[in-house]
Image 1 (cartoon, rainbow, N blue to C red):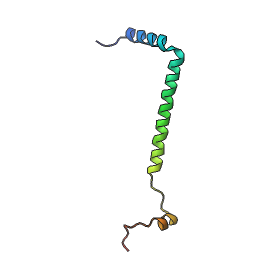
Image 2: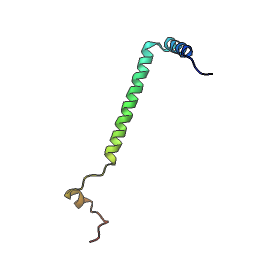
Image 3: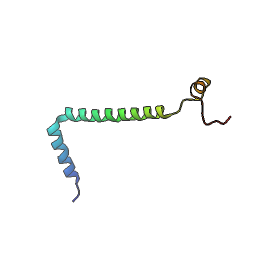
Image 4: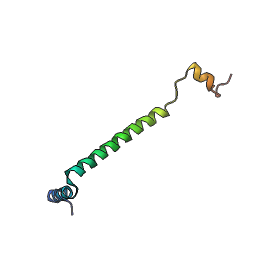
Length: 69
């Protein structure tokens, strides 16, 4: 019992009648904004997780205690 093209067309017509064109476009815009903010959040997480480059200032403030010497 799968869906045929006629079932899908009927479902789309009912959805269009219930929500109207404006609501469906708003909903799709909200979905796009959600995806965009998710990608932005993932990119920010990657930037935060990268360690700071080793510089003289960083070494003086946070000496590496694993060195034997």
